[in-house]
Length: 219
Image 1 (cartoon, rainbow, N blue to C red):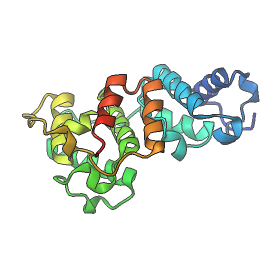
Image 2 (cartoon, rainbow, N blue to C red):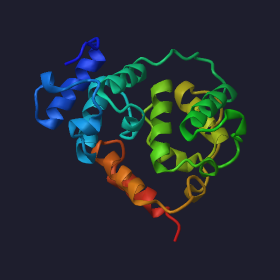
Image 3 (cartoon, one colour):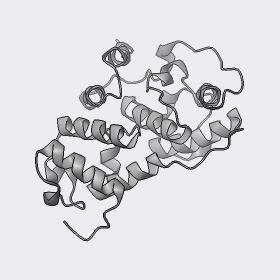
């Protein structure tokens, strides 16, 4: 192993990865890419399920695209497991701005371009990005919401009201809208369907929830 500092997070990632790959931790180079180490989609689902259980986080399987080495993933997991403390009296407007910044980072656009009342699919929030967005919300506000929550709260305004109500018990949550208005965009491609299956294997979605997401594909 290289001279990367062995934090608790990195040790946990290495141990979980070694178990998934059926090898010993000493053979894991934390600066090598997961692809080089032999991690496929099934291994990825197993790894994320193990890390989420171990650290009490909800990190999506596609986090490995942005954090492609054990060292990078460990930093991400540690950050998610120790979120910045949130003020107990945050208003829906404050939550909305925080979610807008997070959404902008995920879809790759300026926060100012995101209309809080526009549907998420207008900004390219597909099923993969939805899982990442929901994982970020959960980590920030200490929630355990599923990605399908975005189907009942399909824009920033309604989602912020929901998060505020659940996290702080504040305000009146608007009634859910029809699910097909939420992420109904282009038909899911093979990668997105594969990501849903990975999410089921990683216990991030139930089979029923994945089936519901697939059911909203346009004809």
